[in-house]
View 1 (cartoon, rainbow, N blue to C red):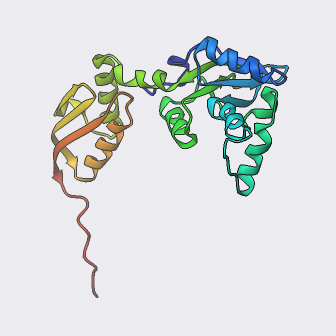
View 2: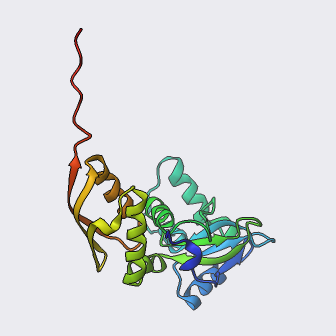
Length: 222
């Protein structure tokens, strides 16, 4: 079973309106001890995010701070640093996920965009309904061993191999596979399928095979 964001997310969304003052944004982040807040429109749809980095731009650009900006991106940051409301200092567009987004995909989005939390939106209305943090995503690694094992067995079945013919050990995210599969090509299929299971950190296989179906067929000369 693939875990989705809806299974690990927090149902509380810390958000501010676009016209929220700079000082109130800072106070909101301090009060709720978060590193970022979503900025929403009148329909509670995220239009951007204000992070601690966004707020620190004002300090970087303060007179005498010695900030040196060059290039289009830095010029935009200079303009944002002069902003006095959430809408003026926020980073856009808002990077969001839905409840149905797989946890692995959410983790990849966080990594690619170098953020530690994401607004969760309703996939129909687009309204914010919660927040998912990096710490929430780590829950996939503390799943019950019995649940992980059940999913590993299903993964082996998906590779067209009967799990009853193998010795499968699941312990602390490590899956050990021992035994023989019908065809050599199935070894990679089994390993790749098991690696997709949430909670699996590493797969150690010592699988053998009955038939080598990867041996190239020599050309025939007439």
